[in-house]
Length: 300
Ligand SMILES: Nc1ncnc2c1ncn2[C@@H]1O[C@H](COP(=O)(O)OP(=O)(O)OP(=O)(O)O)[C@@H](O)[C@H]1O
Ligand SMILES: [Mg+2]
Image (tube, rainbow, N blue to C red; front, side):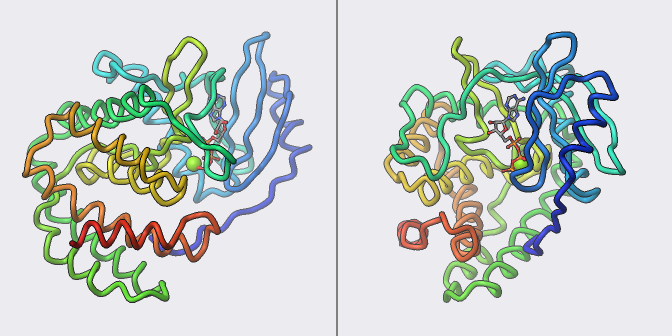
């Protein structure tokens, strides 16, 4: 989906009054982009509010709530490397979905735009293990029949999206597009977080890793999507190819990477690189040069 999603500025005073009327104490509210984010409390327990600014965005927000809810119940015994914030409450404000969840007292592993960005090897290894752990949800959530069906539609969808990105980018991306077309048959299906970056992983003082922002999570995603996403974002948006390579090496070690995996990974990464050209022309952060470098390495 390359179409821009409409946002709407909500009146934060009215939002504050609404949540006060529900019995919350509102400490802080802001709306950087698609969500109003709030630090609120209930009977002295610190909580986090995420309110979608439109009904359409609310559908994604509900997806995040579903992921967090399952991660804290049916999937709990399978999740060894990370936690997600526990859901405390949910509802609609003027038709827009919101949830309140556990407040995470921690920091993201890194954020784009920081002056001196670094991520320790230990945290990169933790991220690699989290990516693997998410993929392990596939077989407890999907039947072989589901996978078989998704394999007929998901790679096609990646190609369609890549074609859209390609046609709305000023670059010549014919070679990259051909690469995806020729190799889409190698793609497999697996669970993915969908927005797996160092800024979606919060680490607490007691070294617990919380995975947040699971709006795009799905059980029938592209295998290695999260690995490709993290690798690509760290490489081109955090502009740290060295950290990206360390992450990928750690993942390969932890997942006992095979030649077959290299084949499965390549078209998925190519799709991310195509998305990267699209992003670089719009987000003002992603580096076109590093994206080109990544493309050159992949296609060589
Ligand atoms: N449960 C939580 N506890 C404490 N802080 C949180 C929690 N969830 C999110 N945050 C804070 O809010 C920031 C943004 O969270 P999140 O990415 O979920 O919001 P978002 O509106 O979906 O952002 P984006 O639109 O960029 O995807 C995080 O980096 C973190 O600082
Ligand atoms: Mg988000």
